Amino acid sequence: MLQGLRRLLAGFALLLVCSLLGWAPRAEAGVANAPGANLEVALITYGPGDTYWERFGHDAIELRDTVSGESATFNYGVFDFDEKGFLLHFARGRMHYMMDAAPTDVDEQYYVSVGRSVTRQRLAFTPAQAADLRDFLLWNLRPENVRYDYDYYADNCATRVRDALDKALGGALKQQLTSRPASMTFRQQTARLMRQQAWLMLILDLGLGPYADQPLNAWQESFLPMVLQREIAHVTVPGANGAPRPLVIEKQLLSPNRLIPPPDEAPDLRLPLGLAGLAFAVFLVMTRKLAPAVYALAGSLYLVLAGLVGVALLVLWTLTTHHSAWANANLLLFNPAAFFLLPALWRSRRGVAPSRRIEVLLVLQLLATLAAILLHLLPGVVQQNQPWLLFALPCWVALAWCLRNGQPRRVAAA
Image (cartoon, rainbow, N blue to C red; front, side):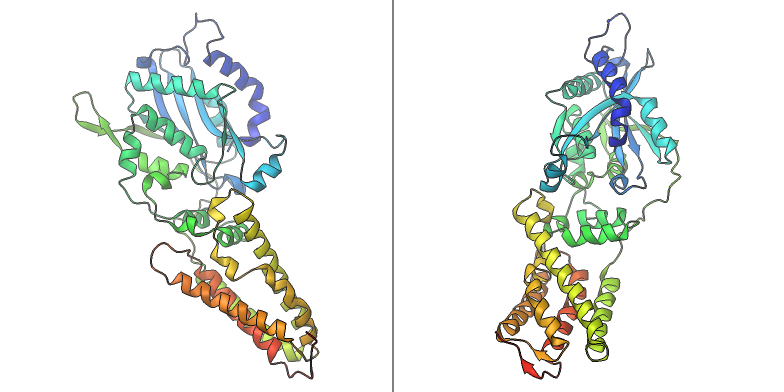
């Protein structure tokens, strides 16, 4: 993403845009007015960075005038923190991103300076295709066309680059990539890339619904720049004699990665979360008699977090356009009803049995947990939330046991 460079490059990019749109004198040839035969098209891929929003990588389209030597990169990864209502738009899932253009060496120097890899794949575009791509990118740079509504998986900086290339190629890219299965789902790719920020990885995994677990093809999985870089190497286009030829003519590693690379596989969260849930359940049961205050504090922490998670999941589903979080089955495990158990939990540390209403609520929560397990066993595309099932089940069972079997001395009022 180039959001950090937005202000730095604003003035320079404006001059470049003016030149590209034809406002500069035509005496000097360049990318904007070079004939298609002089235009060289390349896909530039920047490796993942250290900051969480850089973990997915970035890419751009490079156009180079082979006669004048002028070269510019066009990317779709710019956003503005100073935009009015930015945080509200972000929360509601209506983020506004922008396209931008800059001299190739400016972009490259930045990524080299922060240790991110830079890979260039020169593409076999015909003169007509190169000119069409250039014209489309210039049209896209106009103020009335430069913004778009960002979506993490369906409409981002990589999919916009992919779609622009596909449009110039007459749909050949999409036709070939949709015929190949993806290597991972949205959820798996997200967990793999966010693994270095474990806390954020867990939050994202908890918040993703069944949309993130649908089977993908290579076209959909190329929402990631590194996947697009990999998959485009297998695409062919008609050559001069009509025979298929590789779309990628040449691949160059312009700058190697100097950061810790993401793992090749997504982490399996089932064992760690399952063990964490079991350990917490054992801790609750043991402290129920040995340290009632500790038991009440630990149980309260779980209930508060479960309630807050439930509120967040409900908001994401009902009040935002984050469709990747809709219909999240984790709502059956963590929901706002947990808040109503807090008073009963604190009374139980003194041996007070739960009221009839609390017992009904406990039974409903256990049934909801069972329903989540049964939903997971249904055929077809279901949410892959086994880690959270393994975590929540022992926690709820332990809480129910502690509330109902703590050697009660009296029953609380309803």
